[in-house]
Image (cartoon, rainbow, N blue to C red; front, side, top):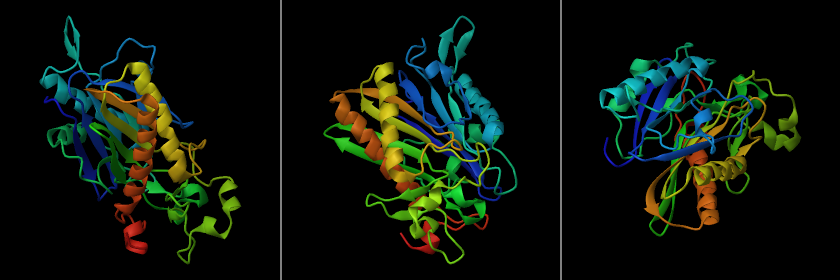
Length: 311
């Protein structure tokens, strides 16, 4: 594996699901923050700041709900073949945390497999340019608080914020109960009525009605990457503070029906005031969420922002 982060996607637009793999350079410090009530995940306990393991080898973001977690074995296989992982007396054991979104309610109830994730690894590249209805964002939807029939397409968004030589990159799979809003508080994607109007524009209190979505049928998955050197505890704080960006871009956010998870990855030697860095992460995530819906494409009869209102 080279010394840069690489990202690869598997997208199934026919069945409306997919997965995204982030391959990490050697020595990548990682942690995560769980801000949703119903996460679907693998290997998250070891990312807690007090746990022994500090370095990971890859992150898998995938569709398919809990079924999609099986796809992580494809990433394990790819890394094992290259002898990448935590060194043991029996060989390298790849450390691959994974998290899922629920996208079984659109398409054909198909979930990504280990073969699909392995394919994503083979296609991984250092250019973080592909966005929209790709990878884990293929089956993403937003604004489901009023019911699936009123939602819009979500997607995978990427944004970067820089301060001198220091940078923070956010990758976000936008699959929320809530509506996505811009910096001015305007809804840009979310629950729409039969006339194509955003329902919450008729009264903000409309969102506080009991969601008509099912348990765990949502989730926003995010990964924050930085070249600023961090300890594992500082990586945890980076993920925790990045959640502010999610709350600025989605209303309502982190509901009982969301399984939101934010990963934080650090690899580099740059130095920066931590509060500045944490605020950069929040802004990068906010922007990534907006990009995710702006770049999304209509699939399975679900309209996207670009198809209904322009970009």
